[in-house]
Length: 417
Image (cartoon, rainbow, N blue to C red; front, side, top):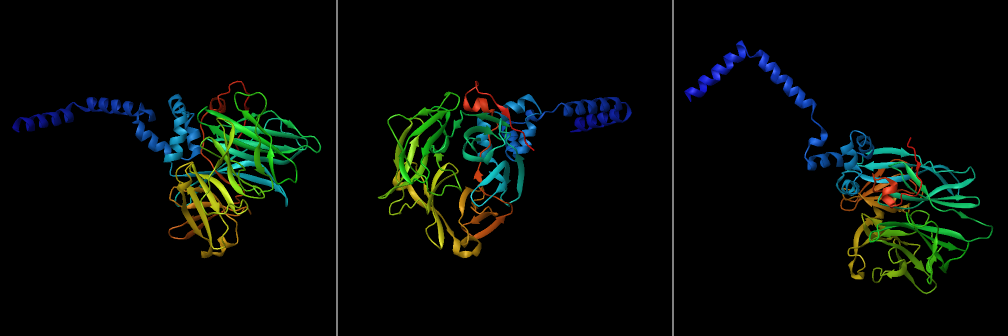
């Protein structure tokens, strides 16, 4: 103990008398080491924890900090982990610039990230669609989204164009156009991802104006592989063209298949289209439930298939298919009591997503405020902002060429405001 104390006193005297230069040298070394610290020196788990808590616009800025961060963020697994671990729920809102009683003209997107206490971070993206003519009637419509990739259709006077784009990365890719002649059939589109083939596909079916239920001819386009639309040989696709799909996707893409409700004179069912095998099939709906396509609606929420039942005047029921493809797994998952407030009673609500705090986020076909509903506390929260046609969105930080596995297509910049 005495030796330790003596050594301590000797060191203190040395510091007071002649150790100033040594202390300054040590301080300079410490400063130099601190200045050499890099964010990539953090443990991977800690770095991910930091990045997952940031909004998307901050993530995009960090991509340009260094090459290592760029590679990390552009890794396909990062976007999936970001969506699953971020405390923010992300939605995209097509923003209306002009409208009338029968159509709405979308020009750009607002990306909205909502926290548990409903604080919102909004970022605007303006899709610069290539060679966009001045005679566009309806602007663009969102056909669907998968893994952060959007499919847009543009209805012009005599041409119908389809594009895939990544609004986060600022890229857009055209698909072969379809010229519309007088009296020719109208078309509906679906967009989805097939995990078994790692390909994105677009389904197109034609309909006669004014027709209701019919067996229709279908066309398919595999992005990154096909150079023209392929006819689906030896099969037709059942579809109801008068069902009011204008508030959501016409085809719900989930588990490598499209899903939609079909009704003829005798019955109604959930029809499917397998993107891998490119074949039509059927899916069972909840037993005892009358599948009226005007009051029942399919949705994909957090990668689960839901059936919205709005036939009651007092409640909205969300059925969840707990185990995909198993009819007995349909379960009444969420019941929204619309009698608790006049705000819910006078609106036809469409579920968008389930927030990270468990609340259900609804949009209104009338384009009013977003509505968040807590089914346990029966608490209603309105999020201000004109929100027509809103949909859940999982961002992709991957280049569009890499995502669709088609390096031969051209990409055009999509600038953000």
